[in-house]
Length: 265
Ligand SMILES: Nc1ncnc2c1ncn2[C@@H]1O[C@H](COP(=O)(O)OP(=O)(O)OP(=O)(O)O)[C@@H](O)[C@H]1O
Image (cartoon, rainbow, N blue to C red; front, side):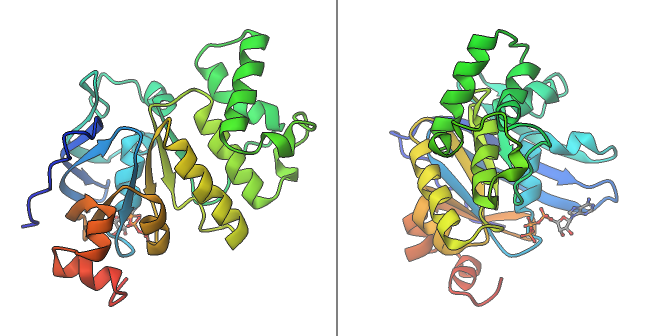
């Protein structure tokens, strides 16, 4: 049994709660085992753990990516606060959930469209069609993603003409444009060089002032640098959750210690 999860400090407002959440792939494999953890408002939560421990599965479940594949099964709840809405409930529309819970993937994956249209896409799905409103939201999202200065003179140019690091910041802008409550980042820097990685890390810290962020990363220095809370997963279970400094300086569970000291991973 994993040790009890530390309650969040009173000053930390909750943005979401993952409650007793389990997930089974279509072949019956249980990838997530009764995970419960808080997601704090306007903080960065890092999910770390050895390959195959279920980090990406948990993240993708938060924005209903697995609904795209039939046969998967889950138990438990993901409650969005303060509304108390269950994001994985049958009555929560997965398309709306994906706008409220934005996602950025490991490899930059812009649409084969202009820079402008990439960022406008989610707004159009939200039913916004007024040009001026879209213009303003595109500019605002590109500024929040710290890429406006690099693209403002070529908004109609192809997103594919940007560098990998720029494409990833464009994907972050695309995720931010519909003004999500939570932004999920699935190893967002693993395909980037150190300079582009540093830019994305700075950006994540800046963004956390206005949006809640959950990041899956293999890079423990990155988790230690940019997150406020860290969840350590092992074989589908949440072994330990706590303040990032505590997890890295004073892990309570031997498995966490083994992982962060590089004894396995
Ligand atoms: N479509 C699938 N069907 C069955 N099992 C799957 C499927 N996708 C992933 N798994 C299994 O679920 C477990 C968790 O996978 P997941 O990708 O979430 O791990 P991870 O911690 O993100 O790993 P990594 O760090 O290597 O990306 C693994 O054992 C994996 O083999």
